[in-house]
Each structure stands twice: as structure tokens, then as C-alpha cells.
Amino acid sequence: MDVQVGDRLIMKKKHPCGSNEFAVLRSGMDFRLKCCGCGREVMVPRVKIEKNIKKVIRDENGDV
Image 1 (cartoon, rainbow, N blue to C red):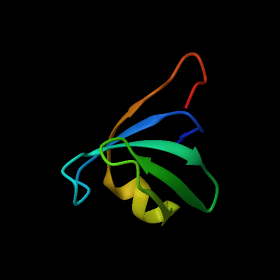
Image 2: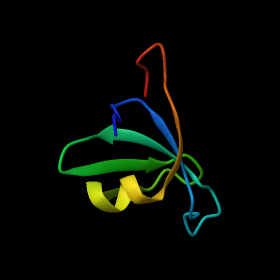
Image 3: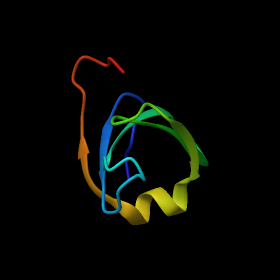
Image 4: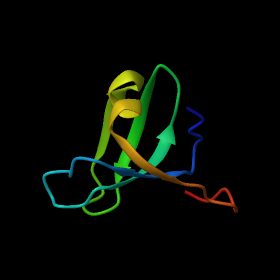
């Protein structure tokens, strides 16, 4: 799956704050994601992320 820095991910499961949208800050063997609801940053392994992605929103400008 092609996920790049600056993309927004809509996940199947919600963050405890209630938001299911995350911004990608770093990608590789694991992802650094920022919750768009509360601003918390989390590191999650690639395997777990790819399994739980519902939709990828590509940011055309490259802004995070």
C-alpha cells in the first residue's frame, strides 16, 4: 500500500478521543501518526496500520 508523508488516513477503529482521522508524519517500517482530533502522536507498526486503513486522502499540496 502506498502511504506517503502528508496523507490523511481514515481508520476502521477510532482513537480514544473519538476521531478516526490521522495525519501521516513519518512512514517506513512503522508510521508516526498524528490524531486530527486531539493532536496526540503515536508510533504504530506498518502491518497494523495497513490492516486498519479504510481510506487514504492524498494531500496534493504536500502540507501536513
